[in-house]
Amino acid sequence: MAQQFIIEGGKKLKGEITVLGSKNAAGALLAACLLTDQPCVIDNLPLVKDILNLLEILKEMGVEVEFLSERKVKITAGSNVDPEKISYEKFSQARTSVLLIGPLAARFKQFKVSRPGGDKIGLRPITTHLDVLEKLGVEVKEDGDFYCFKTKNLIGQEIVLPEFSVTATENLLMTACLAQGQTIIKLAAQEPHVLCLVEQLRKMGASIEKTSENCFSIKGTAGQLLAGVEQTVIADYIEAGTFIIIGALAGQEVLVKNAVPEYLDSFLERLGATGAHFQVMGNDVRVWPADSLKAIRLQALPYPGFPTDLLPLMVPVLTQAKGKSLIHDPLYENRLNYIHQLRKMGADIEMVDPHRAFVFGPTPLMGVSIESWDIRAGASLLVAGLISQGKTVINNIEQIDRGYEKIEERLRGLGADIKRVSA
Image (cartoon, rainbow, N blue to C red; front, side):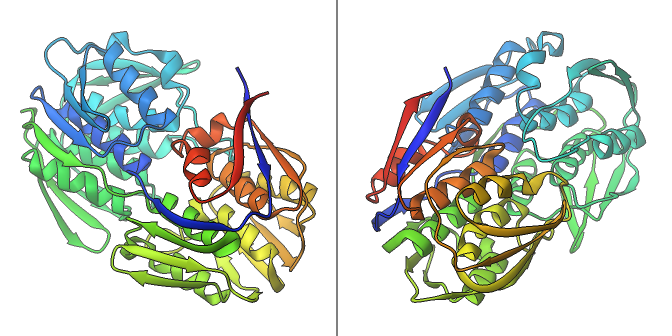
């Protein structure tokens, strides 16, 4: 049944909120468990829709999934794993599913998957994934809405990625671990969750070296499976940034715990440039309201640049900043679709092209009924609802649930007036 968030805006939030595990990290760590037939234990799992869906896909393939505690799971991908039992419907529901392709190609001679789903933020083809796998020796064919994979011999190669793709980097890392010989990945993504995966693969016995800033060298095992592992999911720095923004706009004084500020250098620099008030306190960030905010220029860049997933969250900030701000997201042509929803709330935003927009402020926002099109767009509208006058109704909130665990309950702990209702 469809659900909505109902928000009565204008409440001043106060208290502590703790950042949970990273959805983006957890997906890769779970997928990597397919590279061994020994038990793996993954801790600090976020219980969000995308990760729960991925666990269901693994179970239907024959992977043993046992929760040891609320957020700790034991994964055993033993001899009963059969990729022919993969759920095409579940695979197509989330972009996270694409991370299964690399380890499946490394371990099994052939398998078939449906096209992965995810956010409606524009064309997100997996061409890069397919191209790099083919260079390692995987045969890829398209069959309608399916991709068919056959593997004879995986041979290490020097591969230059055509883009800083996080998931393509992760898939290539996992496949190369079981290949024969050495694989060199150039222009590899360096996001914290990529390095978390590398750490896990090394614990499993993989030989991976970071030879330069954006280059990995992997010595494959020539088909020999890796060992079991215990690994902890890192904190979700996108969730941390979300809560820091909420504190800056709607907070009286908010302490964001487990924020891991070292992952957020570019974000904190740009937020600070607006005049927002915050203090880094070890692993936590204290946020309190500023008297006024000022306009800035903001562009999404590969890590350690400004994260594309936090750019939508900054737009409500810029609606309250004095002057004309410019935002630019070169990655996805539909990423800025949420701007039309913010305009309904009274935001003064001019679209320059599908990738750029001017934001004029400060402008008061009014509560209306709006639609959430993807995870971060939904979070952006939620932030706007918290600072709006009157009642905001956010529809299609299952998109928000894909990336934020029980966010309404956690925000109520700060004093927000937000509730989940059936549409």
